[in-house]
Length: 112
Length: 116
Image (cartoon, rainbow over all chains, first blue to last red; front, side, top):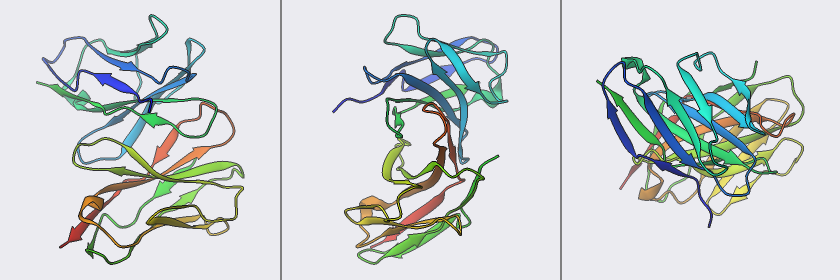
């Protein structure tokens, strides 16, 4: 069964460093998303991406964040200069023509 | 803006018993989807069940079923014959049907404990 994959599973970084979180969506999907879950809190939408451009972004998704689909298979989330409050679980999701979004296993980001 | 409310932060149920998790939502849209996601300790998001708003029939998936009350904007999840593996955080979620790439809006979750 096709699935969304994410790497790395856990990323530890120093405050102020850049991180890139990687996702490989399901191959025939067209819509891609990033969500964030701070420990103990609910899952929050960050950004959606379709046809090589951002469809929608939340107020969390400020200038420190960017997304890219560099090679037609990977979908990346870059945080330019990490802050302590960026520590969270980051989920990538993708969807095709149906209603369901398929979630990856998440990347745990720890900012020290 | 759409909101999803889960008023039960934690619940416990005896193994093999039935438990119902509550969820209410607010929207002015008529076309939308509702979901229940399970998040075990691994923190993976697993889709449990999906309901299309235009369908009157309540969705069922094996031991999981929903009670969808559109007028009341209520969407509860019933787990029958609870098993130890059902212990997890459960999130109720909403997605607009307006655009194919609409985001999912999650509730705060209900942590379900299964008592052996």
